[in-house]
Length: 112
Length: 115
Image (tube, rainbow over all chains, first blue to last red; front, top):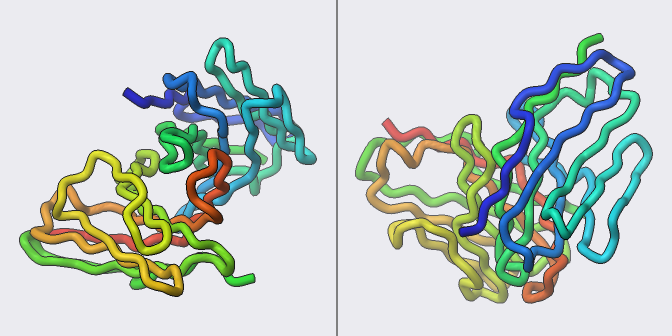
């Protein structure tokens, strides 16, 4: 069935270091992959996304890479700041836009 | 531009009761999706509504039902509540359904506790 795996489940980095979160998906028909940041008590916030026709997308300190052959995609955060601390979810779009399947989340802690 | 809003913020019910959660979509969006997020897990897709019709459903029983209104706002109804229904219920709105590239924007969620 449709599945998204995400690693690691927790990640601690020093302020200023980089953080990388990796996801794999099961359905080769998936073609849209968003990343969400969820802070305590709030709904998920879309931070970056990538479509299957590109291999990499960057937005300031955040980048996402996609390897469709391997069915992997990754989130890269550079120069991390304490306010980057949150739970991050990857997702893959299935069924031609009807629903997203989310990964289990990564709790990122940026230590000052 | 108005974001996605949900009400109520928190709700406590007892097992066997029924509950209705509400969502107002982001301005200009005509599609609403509902998700259940258990503590420490990623959101799980319940169903999606487009132009007042159900447009896809996840692996949830029929006691989870929904509605979408002409102004694109939506309701999630859950009958015969069970303890495992305790979760954060998220509503997400997006643009035109059917295409593969819908960005979904989430509301803050409704925290449901079933005792």
